[in-house]
Image (cartoon, one colour):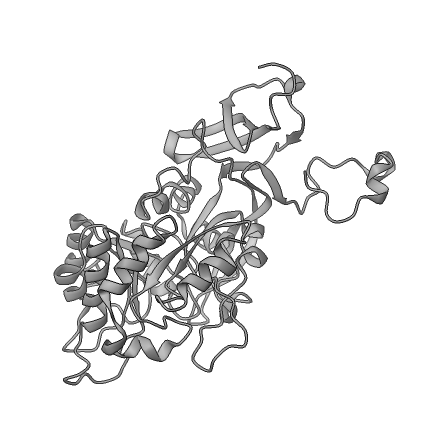
Length: 411
């Protein structure tokens, strides 16, 4: 490389890149917002800026495959209280956030123009089958608001950011009737997903006996479709002997995807820990982050990942389920990797070994001894989150330009 061809060089970090089978100390070079080299040793004489990341894990930018990122004000009485993605994601190493059906087709153009197009974070989305989505959650209850052809057309129109179709919150604990049949929302979403050639994500509760969990997994979802909130209290994961129910293994064999989707009320240690011990891992680890759970029990993706470390999942598996696996599920294989030519999205993580405690959605505690924290986030080659002042001079030695420069110096 000729002089100054490297824009940013990360030296001395332990790289975990499941897509390329890397789990060892490596240097990483960035040029033009892309990964240009990953090697045992890269000389820093050609680098414009070098960061010493010794003691840190360097991983692809994390993907939160289930969150809610359409901050709308004022909120209606039935609006899900969503977050500003840049206000909550970068500090957890997340460079790609996937909104899980906050908007239906009526609000999606505004979401695209006012949030997605203006965000520094990469923001993708599932499109809600209901016209008003979670901006007007009453529409999620009404089959008259489900229009698969319109949803498919909108998904096609915004095909660069729409990754699938979402069904959620339909007839939760409410009896069915002639106008509100058990599978109206799920089947409409599946229809729209099929018409647009995308996967469907389903958030539903069993209403027995008309709507059961095995029926969802085995008779409705297709290979590549996603059941989220898999460890919520309402799902029967175990048989009478405490073993994972056979229909779950059968669904996984068929290609059904199981997403964590922690949320305020959808993750229970009493389901997740026995499932993990029996090898029934979530395909994707995600937060279902919105305002009601940012102060707990979710907090952010690194916090949820830390729960899994303390539950016994190896770190490489945790990284896999927050990088390359969600990229595969949403059909964006260019993400979640540190391959040469990939967008330079990276998370710098520190793993602390110390006594910790974590809460689930039922206010039960897990004691552990491992906690992940984000020491830096790089988005398209720019250091956008830098709580440890990486690459900055000590204040006694800072050049005069630093005395007057406005704003936060990260580049």
